[in-house]
Length: 113
Image: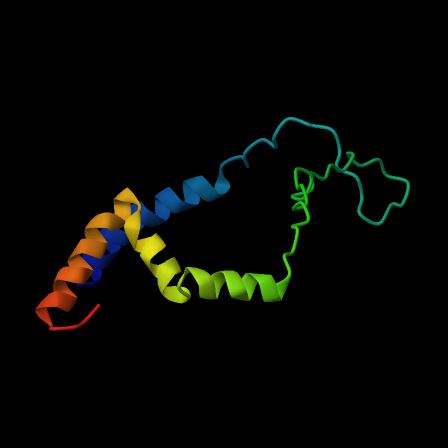
């Protein structure tokens, strides 16, 4: 058993030893030295900042109507149900199938509109 281990271990040890004794790899080619972080006089590249708010445009002020006139207008046209009818009259194309599926499901459940 010891002979078997020696027979397997000796070639591996020789291979490891040959790599360990070989000349170390050559250092990479010299480049510009990096500035020392503790040197206050070291030159550093200029910093650049692009603000995320550079293209921001503020919203235009809205004209606010008188609340009493607004409430009277809503009451005159039929209250919240008028807005619900308006929203149901022209659903977007993507949600049209979802709206028809929802109305079919509520009709099957016996719900009233």
